[in-house]
Length: 239
Image 1 (cartoon, rainbow, N blue to C red):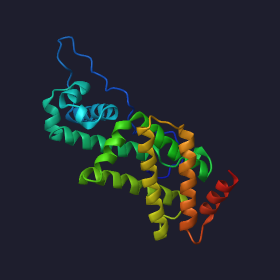
Image 2: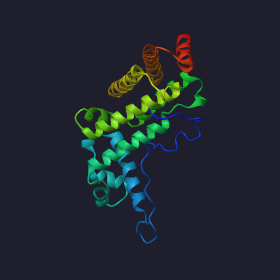
Image 3: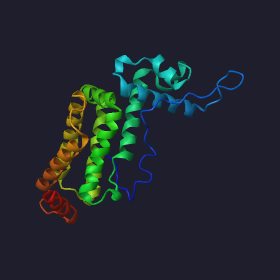
Image 4: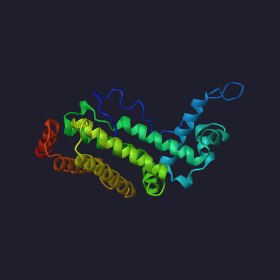
């Protein structure tokens, strides 16, 4: 889970990409493709790559597949990204940007406990739509410096979102920072196992599991709880 705090959910999905195929642009009467700006072509390639890499492992997707999905000339992929790996990394960056939008705390979800559960719920829903992206990212992260950097950046953003939500971002206790990074690793770990087991459990069970682990970690890492931490632990005890 990652992102920053928000006062509402009206713009929650504006930056996020769906798993739907990139639309093919209608041809002009002459049969020629309409003019598309270089930025437009580049983004179409990334959206097409994200769709395909969400459905199939990296090795099962070809440059031709991506170019055909984006409906652009095949040479443009090499021009913009240098090859398949470049567009794959761009797709992973897009995933991180999407999650920063979708998994930020949203006040309209309710109190602090409900906001944390909402963050987790949207995380699982996103990767249910993009399973191979997470599997590929986590599988390659230990040995690949670039994908590891993306994964670590996502975990750091998630931990920062919690600090902001708890009102502890200005002077966070070191133990809490470490605990929250551990919670992000736990979230990734159970998500990949869930995807590998064909989504054996309902998302709500996973949400409750992540919530319980997060609350226990926060409670044990904060020696002098503020109002937000007390509200969270109280809500957890009541539920």
